[in-house]
Length: 561
Image (cartoon, rainbow, N blue to C red; front, side, top):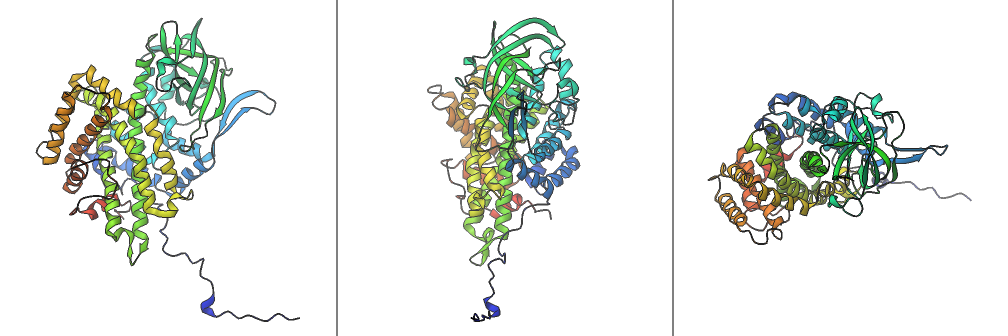
């Protein structure tokens, strides 16, 4: 029996697959040239000489190819291969090729070494700016890069180690092969501090180290027995680790391979199943007589490794600022292309308030971070050295703590697509808490700040010298600085008030640095919104009369096009 024929009216052809009102991907743009605040900071803090190189890096990190590397490195997580097919212990972690491409891009650019090999005015500023660009593509691969960078001051304390290891650590390049460090020309360094029973209380570490009665080219040899609860980037060529020796808690450089070409018994028990930072492997390891060489003096492990920690904390500031920048860029780009109720989202007053406020957070974070980068460039200057002692814990605490809430708000700007793994915002959101927790969470930073102020009262004076340079710029800032001075003079319940003091120091310093930026819209809006009342406000609650268009234009990644 014949079926009846159905003829569709032309207007009845389904249009469900016609894509409209969807913003195009933010790709093939220059992440440096389109970042007004970053361009200004590079010039202001003394790295204008690097502008052309940074512009080239901005074009590269904004390219569709490199952005895709970031997606693939996170989609294809590292995999542990503890044994080969014959049952031999190999403890190898395999990464997607895109991760190796990201590592090569960063290490060949010298992000792990440039201020050490080419010191001078603006060296740390230029490196921080480039790291800020690379971190916007993928946060995970920055972990081994920053640890390698930060290991240099610690290893320099021990001449024998410095002579044998630093030439290869300071060589631009990336060699991912699983072979002894003696067979490579460029090396990466990791770190193993945390144990199950202690966390931040590293003095409770139970890993033991015994001298083995022989000298090597790197100095006196020890063997370590114990465990490490978090060891990130386990394919690094060596690791700085803390262990209890006869003279107390000491620091050791532990290679992945012994100099004789045999595998050092550092056994990876498992990879951590992390919610974020997934392109980078984090592991639990057992040390079963692993060879290591002492770094610094015996019993002085914390002072030795704290030199590394100080630099990684700075990179946490850079990384969180970069994450916020990428979130703003995505949110503004989306809202300028997405329409609702007859206007683009960016034209809607409520959304403009949110976007401007999100950009304002980036402005404050970047100004403080790059000011600390300039201090690193002049760390031999007494004022700059004192400023760093307080600025690193203050910046690490506040910038990293602001990042997760900022990521969520940017995600909400994008809506449903913001929580989809096909888009970058979901990854930014998952990555956001990592820097706040790694290298000492909020309380650790706030208490470290109190110890620094007690140990070095001159550092407090240096802090206020910096703040006073903005005296008279705005009455709210003047009042906030005076209130901070009074709060620090009150010695009662300091530990209980540690977070509020750290927050006040961060906000006043950010405001003072934004005064230096010279853009009245930026500085006055920051001061009015951050210093006029409770600081735990939601984004999008800027006061009336703010020039939100200027702020959004500063955050627009395509502003120069």
